[in-house]
Image (cartoon, rainbow, N blue to C red; front, side, top):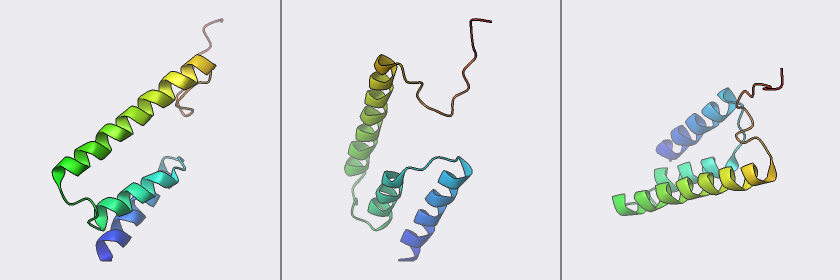
Length: 79
């Protein structure tokens, strides 16, 4: 329980610090800290899934004309 509390509070603190609200990050943190993922192979699967989701978000948002990630600084090239 202590590991879950510490890991979730650390994740929450980083999300506040980075001004990035992302509830699934807390869920992933709990999955790992509660020991539901107990083998390194399972952790690799989660890491691959996260990578694929980020790649998908980048592609879909670029095709839609949305600047992603939103906190990235964009320079106006027309000036």
